[in-house]
Length: 500
RNA sequence: GGGCCGUUAGCUCAGUGGUAGAGCAUCUCGCUUUUAACGAGAGUGUCCACAGUUCGAUCCUGUGACGGCCUACCA
Image (cartoon, rainbow, N blue to C red):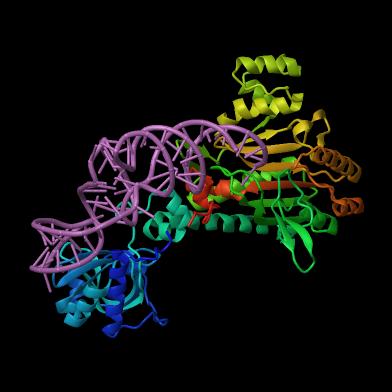
């Protein structure tokens, strides 16, 4: 919300209270506040202390710093809730206990939302509530705007995303989501580090945005007068590091794709990619399974994760199906249906699959059938292997299954979460695929991958056989925090600016 | 990009073709043990914007802005 040029009454009242506080000797935005405890520490330390004990042997003086989040006034006594980022604790001020001057200053000048430092001793009320009995206080930072409803909080999703700070301060559970996300990322890093991987950082600003099929964001470097793109994937740089002799590397980083926004897509998103020399797709699948099981148990305490209406079990071995097998078992197709594109089209039509016109290649339509009929059923972690070569232009062909590739995608909760490959390291093959992409670009495909001569040069020096993985961090965070939209696990999701 | 829905007080929401209400928050008064404290009283609005229809529009119609959900591209 922009501050209106004319202050409304609620804002003016708060300013008047701030001015009154200053006139009565209060300090303006002091910098030296020093808490010696937190609400959570005191609640834990005195959890067992009863009222008489606290009265009989006074506790040390504690100073807490936090926001005033609730006020209950009884003439010469008041209770407030102090929120300090780790918890909430009741505080009280009274004419008897704090003195008329201190009580009056607080009562007259402190509003909901103000940051205060309060000093006092612990006690219990008649109802048994642990309470810091305040003897001195100071205003640290004034809250100059009225806060949302104490009961409902801030529910307007647009306001929550635009003003995440406000969302977090009135909806403390939002902080938990991002705390979980942070712990998840730490756990992933530790797991890979323990496996001998090295975390690296490769360019975000790239001459050519390669490594995926997506439209990039364009930018410009002034001093070099150079057109640059924000990366869409780190892949081609990480593979260069394999050439350079680093056998296990990963990058956990932001990527940028100039595409639509949805509950599953944000234009900037976080992806983990790792590459491991002398490893195959199968080894990558196993490592991914081990990683996810480790992270879920580490964060959750056990391997079963509630997500929406489902309970997802990371404890059992993940299901592994070729895409073809999944169409037979879960898609309801017969061997005969899968024999030709015409048979597949006819069978798909009876199942209500939308038929593109003209019907695409066998492989593209095959994958279309998979996405429509099978993907929504893949709630429990499932690896889908051997994609058609038509939909996987940069992947090794399967040595035993011509027309199919050594690729595997991990599906959880009906969504794609990770990709696993036996990486292509034959420079002649790679050159041919770059040529094919160049043709697509010339035909107007804005997502075709640019021809990367330097990458090809690196491959010509020899890249060891390797496995590679990409894992969507935001989507994993959605799973672990039980959030339905990617915007709920991104602190500041991209929104259109409001017209002023 | 397409479809559907939404936008009313600081917040959460009702509501009406005759210029609008509740709860919380705010203000005043009372109150020294509350837990969404309570009691009495008060104030609070560009009803998203613009245009049209109408004697009269917050309400009906159109256009636009922003958001949500679905869909498309994709991870």
